[in-house]
Amino acid sequence: MEPKSPKYLGIGYLKKHLNFIKNSSYQGVGGIWKIGASKSGPVLGITIHTHGNEPSGLAVLEYFREKFPLEQRLKNGVVIFSLNNIRATERFLAAKNTEEKMSSRFVDINMNRLPDNVMRCNKNDSRYEIRRVQELKNIWEQFDVGFDIHSTTQENDGMIMNIGAVHPQLIRGFPITDIITNIENVQIAKPAVFFYGNGSIPVMGIEAGSHESPQAFTRAIACTEVLLKNLGMIEGGTTTNDQKYREYFVDSSLIFPDASYSLVKQFKPYEEVIAGQKIATNGKHNLFAPLTGHVILAPSGMTVKNLDEEVMFFVRPPKITIFE
Ligand SMILES: [Zn+2]
Image 1 (cartoon, rainbow, N blue to C red):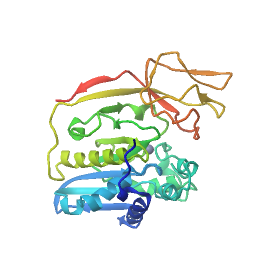
Image 2 (cartoon, rainbow, N blue to C red):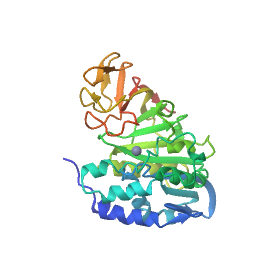
Image 3 (cartoon, protein in one colour):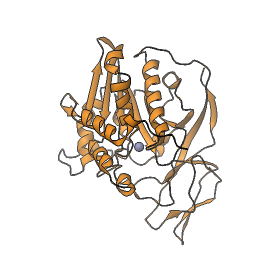
Protein backbone atom coordinates (compact mmCIF):
# COMPACT_ATOMS: atom_id res chain seq x y z
CA MET A 1 0.00 0.00 0.00
CA GLU A 2 1.19 3.48 -0.84
CA PRO A 3 2.32 5.17 2.40
CA LYS A 4 0.32 8.28 3.18
CA SER A 5 2.10 11.55 2.57
CA PRO A 6 3.04 13.27 5.84
CA LYS A 7 0.56 16.03 6.68
CA TYR A 8 3.18 18.72 6.20
CA LEU A 9 3.53 17.70 2.57
CA GLY A 10 -0.17 18.11 1.75
CA ILE A 11 -1.27 20.57 -0.93
CA GLY A 12 -2.03 23.29 1.65
CA TYR A 13 1.53 23.11 2.98
CA LEU A 14 3.05 23.06 -0.48
CA LYS A 15 1.04 26.22 -1.27
CA LYS A 16 2.44 27.87 1.82
CA HIS A 17 6.01 27.19 0.68
CA LEU A 18 5.24 28.25 -2.87
CA ASN A 19 3.97 31.57 -1.51
CA PHE A 20 7.10 31.95 0.57
CA ILE A 21 9.52 31.49 -2.32
CA LYS A 22 7.32 33.41 -4.74
CA ASN A 23 7.61 36.40 -2.45
CA SER A 24 11.35 35.94 -1.88
CA SER A 25 13.70 37.61 -4.26
CA TYR A 26 17.41 37.95 -4.83
CA GLN A 27 18.99 40.66 -6.96
CA GLY A 28 15.53 41.73 -8.07
CA VAL A 29 14.45 38.29 -9.28
CA GLY A 30 11.38 36.73 -7.65
CA GLY A 31 11.04 33.06 -6.80
CA ILE A 32 14.58 32.91 -5.44
CA TRP A 33 15.54 32.06 -1.86
CA LYS A 34 19.19 32.70 -1.15
CA ILE A 35 20.93 31.50 2.00
CA GLY A 36 24.52 32.57 2.62
CA ALA A 37 26.94 31.45 5.35
CA SER A 38 29.49 33.88 6.77
CA LYS A 39 32.32 31.60 5.59
CA SER A 40 32.95 31.49 1.87
CA GLY A 41 32.38 28.34 -0.15
CA PRO A 42 30.66 27.05 -3.27
CA VAL A 43 27.44 28.44 -4.71
CA LEU A 44 24.99 25.54 -4.96
CA GLY A 45 21.96 26.20 -7.13
CA ILE A 46 18.97 24.00 -6.28
CA THR A 47 16.29 24.42 -8.90
CA ILE A 48 12.77 23.16 -8.35
CA HIS A 49 9.59 23.13 -10.40
CA THR A 50 11.24 23.51 -13.77
CA HIS A 51 7.99 21.70 -14.50
CA GLY A 52 4.91 22.94 -12.64
CA ASN A 53 3.52 19.50 -11.82
CA GLU A 54 6.58 18.16 -9.95
CA PRO A 55 6.14 19.01 -6.25
CA SER A 56 9.14 17.08 -4.87
CA GLY A 57 11.00 20.38 -5.15
CA LEU A 58 8.61 22.15 -2.80
CA ALA A 59 8.98 19.25 -0.38
CA VAL A 60 12.74 19.88 -0.41
CA LEU A 61 12.13 23.59 0.22
CA GLU A 62 9.80 22.74 3.11
CA TYR A 63 12.44 20.47 4.61
CA PHE A 64 15.22 23.04 4.49
CA ARG A 65 12.98 25.77 5.91
CA GLU A 66 11.22 23.89 8.70
CA LYS A 67 12.62 20.44 9.42
CA PHE A 68 16.29 21.25 8.92
CA PRO A 69 16.61 25.03 8.88
CA LEU A 70 19.40 25.55 6.40
CA GLU A 71 19.84 29.15 7.50
CA GLN A 72 21.18 27.83 10.81
CA ARG A 73 23.06 24.81 9.53
CA LEU A 74 24.87 26.04 6.45
CA LYS A 75 28.58 26.02 7.32
CA ASN A 76 29.95 27.78 4.28
CA GLY A 77 29.07 28.99 0.83
CA VAL A 78 25.75 29.98 -0.65
CA VAL A 79 22.64 28.00 -1.51
CA ILE A 80 20.30 29.50 -4.08
CA PHE A 81 16.89 27.88 -4.33
CA SER A 82 15.23 28.82 -7.59
CA LEU A 83 11.59 28.00 -8.25
CA ASN A 84 11.98 28.02 -11.99
CA ASN A 85 8.43 27.96 -13.30
CA ILE A 86 6.29 29.97 -10.87
CA ARG A 87 3.18 30.31 -12.99
CA ALA A 88 2.98 26.62 -13.93
CA THR A 89 3.44 25.66 -10.25
CA GLU A 90 0.58 27.97 -9.25
CA ARG A 91 -1.60 26.26 -11.83
CA PHE A 92 -0.59 22.85 -10.55
CA LEU A 93 -1.45 23.68 -6.95
CA ALA A 94 -4.78 25.17 -8.04
CA ALA A 95 -5.67 22.20 -10.28
CA LYS A 96 -9.00 20.57 -9.53
CA ASN A 97 -8.52 17.32 -11.44
CA THR A 98 -5.94 15.10 -13.14
CA GLU A 99 -6.47 16.78 -16.49
CA GLU A 100 -5.66 20.21 -15.05
CA LYS A 101 -2.68 18.80 -13.19
CA MET A 102 -1.29 17.23 -16.36
CA SER A 103 -1.60 20.48 -18.27
CA SER A 104 0.27 22.41 -15.56
CA ARG A 105 3.65 21.07 -16.64
CA PHE A 106 4.29 24.43 -18.34
CA VAL A 107 2.35 27.48 -19.44
CA ASP A 108 3.54 28.23 -23.00
CA ILE A 109 6.66 26.16 -23.62
CA ASN A 110 8.45 23.36 -21.80
CA MET A 111 11.28 24.89 -19.76
CA ASN A 112 13.39 21.83 -20.57
CA ARG A 113 12.94 22.26 -24.31
CA LEU A 114 14.15 25.83 -24.73
CA PRO A 115 15.04 27.24 -28.14
CA ASP A 116 18.77 27.90 -28.69
CA ASN A 117 18.09 31.61 -29.07
CA VAL A 118 16.06 31.90 -25.84
CA MET A 119 18.36 34.59 -24.41
CA ARG A 120 18.09 36.67 -27.57
CA CYS A 121 14.29 36.53 -27.78
CA ASN A 122 12.40 39.77 -27.27
CA LYS A 123 12.11 40.80 -23.61
CA ASN A 124 8.36 41.09 -24.14
CA ASP A 125 8.06 37.68 -25.78
CA SER A 126 4.49 36.45 -25.42
CA ARG A 127 5.66 33.10 -23.99
CA TYR A 128 5.87 33.14 -20.18
CA GLU A 129 8.76 30.65 -19.94
CA ILE A 130 10.93 32.69 -22.33
CA ARG A 131 10.53 35.80 -20.18
CA ARG A 132 11.11 33.81 -16.98
CA VAL A 133 14.30 32.15 -18.32
CA GLN A 134 15.65 35.54 -19.35
CA GLU A 135 15.17 36.92 -15.85
CA LEU A 136 16.61 33.79 -14.23
CA LYS A 137 19.74 33.79 -16.39
CA ASN A 138 21.75 36.14 -14.13
CA ILE A 139 20.91 34.01 -11.11
CA TRP A 140 21.58 30.67 -12.83
CA GLU A 141 24.96 31.92 -14.03
CA GLN A 142 26.17 32.34 -10.44
CA PHE A 143 25.95 28.60 -9.71
CA ASP A 144 29.17 26.63 -9.11
CA VAL A 145 27.14 23.42 -8.93
CA GLY A 146 23.61 22.97 -10.29
CA PHE A 147 21.03 20.51 -9.00
CA ASP A 148 17.65 20.27 -10.74
CA ILE A 149 14.81 18.31 -9.09
CA HIS A 150 12.20 16.53 -11.22
CA SER A 151 9.72 13.67 -11.10
CA THR A 152 8.03 11.37 -13.60
CA THR A 153 4.51 10.19 -14.42
CA GLN A 154 5.34 6.56 -13.65
CA GLU A 155 6.71 5.38 -10.32
CA ASN A 156 10.38 4.38 -10.31
CA ASP A 157 13.28 4.09 -7.89
CA GLY A 158 14.74 7.43 -8.91
CA MET A 159 17.22 8.35 -11.62
CA ILE A 160 20.24 10.61 -11.62
CA MET A 161 19.99 12.58 -14.85
CA ASN A 162 23.58 13.31 -15.57
CA ILE A 163 24.64 16.16 -17.80
CA GLY A 164 28.18 15.84 -19.20
CA ALA A 165 30.67 13.94 -17.05
CA VAL A 166 29.52 11.87 -14.06
CA HIS A 167 30.66 13.37 -10.74
CA PRO A 168 31.00 10.40 -8.35
CA GLN A 169 32.15 12.60 -5.47
CA LEU A 170 28.88 14.57 -5.63
CA ILE A 171 26.42 11.67 -5.96
CA ARG A 172 28.10 9.37 -3.43
CA GLY A 173 25.47 8.39 -0.86
CA PHE A 174 22.42 9.34 -2.96
CA PRO A 175 19.62 6.82 -2.41
CA ILE A 176 19.52 6.35 -6.21
CA THR A 177 21.73 3.98 -8.14
CA ASP A 178 20.50 4.42 -11.73
CA ILE A 179 22.42 7.01 -13.71
CA ILE A 180 21.17 8.25 -17.06
CA THR A 181 23.80 9.78 -19.34
CA ASN A 182 23.82 11.53 -22.72
CA ILE A 183 20.18 12.66 -22.64
CA GLU A 184 21.29 16.25 -23.28
CA ASN A 185 22.67 15.17 -26.66
CA VAL A 186 19.52 13.31 -27.68
CA GLN A 187 16.66 15.47 -26.43
CA ILE A 188 15.01 18.18 -28.49
CA ALA A 189 16.30 21.73 -27.81
CA LYS A 190 17.95 22.88 -24.58
CA PRO A 191 17.14 21.94 -20.99
CA ALA A 192 17.13 24.76 -18.41
CA VAL A 193 20.32 23.34 -16.84
CA PHE A 194 22.18 24.10 -20.08
CA PHE A 195 22.23 27.74 -18.94
CA TYR A 196 23.49 27.10 -15.39
CA GLY A 197 26.92 28.39 -14.31
CA ASN A 198 29.66 29.20 -16.77
CA GLY A 199 28.86 26.30 -19.08
CA SER A 200 31.34 23.88 -17.53
CA ILE A 201 30.13 23.48 -13.95
CA PRO A 202 28.96 20.14 -12.53
CA VAL A 203 25.24 19.92 -13.26
CA MET A 204 22.87 17.09 -12.60
CA GLY A 205 19.22 16.46 -12.20
CA ILE A 206 17.20 13.79 -10.48
CA GLU A 207 13.93 12.17 -11.34
CA ALA A 208 12.84 11.51 -7.78
CA GLY A 209 9.95 9.13 -8.51
CA SER A 210 6.35 9.70 -9.53
CA HIS A 211 5.06 13.25 -9.21
CA GLU A 212 3.11 13.09 -5.99
CA SER A 213 4.47 10.00 -4.28
CA PRO A 214 5.78 10.41 -0.73
CA GLN A 215 8.77 8.25 -1.72
CA ALA A 216 9.70 10.79 -4.38
CA PHE A 217 9.52 13.60 -1.81
CA THR A 218 11.69 11.65 0.63
CA ARG A 219 14.18 10.69 -2.07
CA ALA A 220 14.50 14.29 -3.33
CA ILE A 221 15.11 15.53 0.22
CA ALA A 222 17.69 12.80 0.91
CA CYS A 223 19.62 13.51 -2.32
CA THR A 224 19.73 17.23 -1.63
CA GLU A 225 20.97 16.68 1.91
CA VAL A 226 23.66 14.25 0.74
CA LEU A 227 24.78 16.69 -1.95
CA LEU A 228 25.18 19.45 0.67
CA LYS A 229 27.27 17.05 2.77
CA ASN A 230 29.35 15.95 -0.20
CA LEU A 231 30.11 19.60 -0.90
CA GLY A 232 31.12 20.10 2.75
CA MET A 233 28.41 22.74 3.16
CA ILE A 234 26.61 21.07 6.08
CA GLU A 235 27.83 18.83 8.88
CA GLY A 236 28.12 15.09 8.34
CA GLY A 237 29.84 12.67 6.06
CA THR A 238 28.23 10.26 3.68
CA THR A 239 28.88 6.60 3.20
CA THR A 240 32.08 5.74 1.40
CA ASN A 241 31.05 2.16 0.74
CA ASP A 242 31.64 1.15 -2.84
CA GLN A 243 28.27 1.56 -4.48
CA LYS A 244 27.24 -0.24 -7.63
CA TYR A 245 25.55 2.02 -10.19
CA ARG A 246 23.71 1.09 -13.35
CA GLU A 247 24.67 3.57 -16.02
CA TYR A 248 22.22 3.87 -18.92
CA PHE A 249 23.42 5.69 -22.03
CA VAL A 250 20.59 7.41 -23.89
CA ASP A 251 20.85 6.36 -27.52
CA SER A 252 17.77 7.86 -29.12
CA SER A 253 14.20 8.93 -28.56
CA LEU A 254 10.72 8.18 -29.79
CA ILE A 255 8.84 11.09 -31.32
CA PHE A 256 5.34 10.85 -32.76
CA PRO A 257 5.15 12.50 -36.20
CA ASP A 258 1.55 13.57 -35.45
CA ALA A 259 -1.36 13.02 -33.10
CA SER A 260 -2.60 9.92 -34.94
CA TYR A 261 0.10 7.73 -33.33
CA SER A 262 -0.08 5.78 -30.13
CA LEU A 263 2.15 3.25 -28.39
CA VAL A 264 1.28 -0.40 -29.01
CA LYS A 265 1.14 -0.90 -25.23
CA GLN A 266 2.02 0.82 -22.02
CA PHE A 267 5.76 0.57 -21.40
CA LYS A 268 7.08 0.16 -17.86
CA PRO A 269 10.22 1.95 -16.64
CA TYR A 270 13.29 0.19 -18.09
CA GLU A 271 11.13 -2.24 -20.05
CA GLU A 272 13.30 -4.25 -22.41
CA VAL A 273 12.94 -3.77 -26.16
CA ILE A 274 14.53 -5.55 -29.09
CA ALA A 275 15.84 -3.78 -32.20
CA GLY A 276 13.09 -3.73 -34.81
CA GLN A 277 10.28 -4.37 -32.33
CA LYS A 278 7.07 -2.48 -33.12
CA ILE A 279 6.68 0.30 -30.57
CA ALA A 280 3.99 2.61 -31.93
CA THR A 281 1.54 2.83 -34.79
CA ASN A 282 -1.16 4.94 -36.37
CA GLY A 283 -2.70 1.98 -38.14
CA LYS A 284 -0.89 2.71 -41.42
CA HIS A 285 2.67 3.39 -40.34
CA ASN A 286 4.63 1.72 -37.58
CA LEU A 287 7.53 2.97 -35.47
CA PHE A 288 10.18 0.50 -34.32
CA ALA A 289 12.75 0.19 -31.54
CA PRO A 290 16.10 1.39 -32.94
CA LEU A 291 18.15 -0.81 -30.62
CA THR A 292 18.10 -3.68 -28.20
CA GLY A 293 18.01 -2.10 -24.78
CA HIS A 294 15.43 -0.46 -22.57
CA VAL A 295 12.94 2.41 -22.57
CA ILE A 296 12.84 5.20 -19.99
CA LEU A 297 10.48 8.08 -19.24
CA ALA A 298 7.57 6.38 -20.95
CA PRO A 299 4.16 8.01 -20.45
CA SER A 300 1.63 6.42 -18.11
CA GLY A 301 -0.72 5.60 -20.98
CA MET A 302 -0.30 4.89 -24.67
CA THR A 303 -0.81 8.40 -26.00
CA VAL A 304 0.79 11.75 -25.24
CA LYS A 305 -0.51 15.28 -24.99
CA ASN A 306 2.55 17.25 -26.09
CA LEU A 307 3.78 16.32 -29.53
CA ASP A 308 6.70 18.74 -29.38
CA GLU A 309 8.32 16.59 -26.72
CA GLU A 310 9.76 13.05 -26.88
CA VAL A 311 7.32 10.26 -26.07
CA MET A 312 10.12 8.29 -24.37
CA PHE A 313 13.82 7.49 -24.71
CA PHE A 314 15.77 4.40 -25.72
CA VAL A 315 18.79 3.52 -23.58
CA ARG A 316 21.53 0.97 -24.13
CA PRO A 317 21.80 -2.02 -21.79
CA PRO A 318 23.29 -0.70 -18.55
CA LYS A 319 26.94 -0.66 -17.69
CA ILE A 320 27.62 -1.55 -14.07
CA THR A 321 29.97 1.01 -12.56
CA ILE A 322 31.59 1.08 -9.15
CA PHE A 323 33.18 4.39 -8.29
CA GLU A 324 36.26 4.09 -6.07
ZN1 LIG B 1 10.41 17.43 -15.01
